[in-house]
Image (cartoon, rainbow, N blue to C red):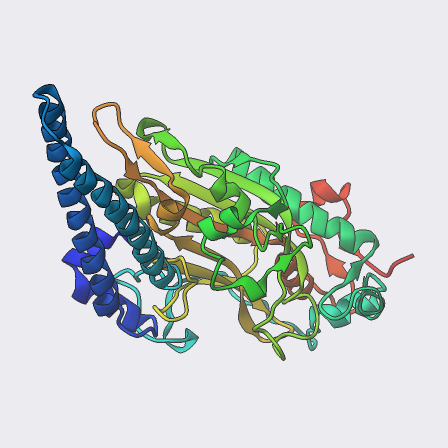
Length: 425
């Protein structure tokens, strides 16, 4: 959500940001409503002042034994008029909110222009893709040949974009999640949390999935939403709170299943585990002061990178263009892991700095001991990592000519020392 005062003072910058994101300029519409709102507020204040003056005159008239009926009639009329204006003020506020709530965050100045991924910029790369002396298979072929992955039966039970994992492959996914949580809590300073998987509309609005992306979510019959990412639950833990600036940044993480309808992904990644309706993800969220915002963005990006480095998976960091970022983001780094079966890099994490965009929706603030007032915190979120996609990357990068899969050294302690995954028995 935007600060209306900032739009009033920076209309051209506001419109420029929207255009960079592929939206029409909105400053004229917003400022017209804002002008109406301020005019109504002025009328209301004038009427309030007039009513106060009349109340004093009525008191004096009664004290002097004079007739105050005319004055009292005017007060009555003022009260009625003020009630009408109050209702009009609420209506205008709602109109302003409806305009602003569907507009994305303003992109940072240093990110690339462009409306899709064609202008994303490579920030850095790490690791060399493995050279195979055989044709590497994609993960779904590997998993089905090993008898450890079953898409066909999942489709019969739940439909497309679901999977059954069995035996050591199920254990490997669990090992990956545990490895990620241990890294983030023991090395990167995150506090692990157990969070709600169903949330109310206010929470989903707070992180800006609502109202614009309702069709991408699953909703229960009694009005709860299944979380599309633990970002919703983790970030809303701070909703409505005033935090001590001296204790920021606060870093939290959680492993949860995530649920997405993939309404806008028809025809994309219909095979395998890349794009599913249900998947596990380790999420990172940070709450910080405006001064530490960009520093925290780098810390979160590095935290996600550490997971891939520990697994020895080649990847690259991309700075997304203005039009390719998520709705709430001011700047996003995507981590793309190398998948030899597909012979290309694929996204495995998005790390976004949302500035105060979500905090304004959630009313999350901070205060210093030396400050009189409060200010909005900055919120950041990132995948650390998508567990299913990391499983895909491990399977494809660690596959052997006979179809078996080596277990990365970092995961062997979570697999009871197992070093090779072979056919299900």
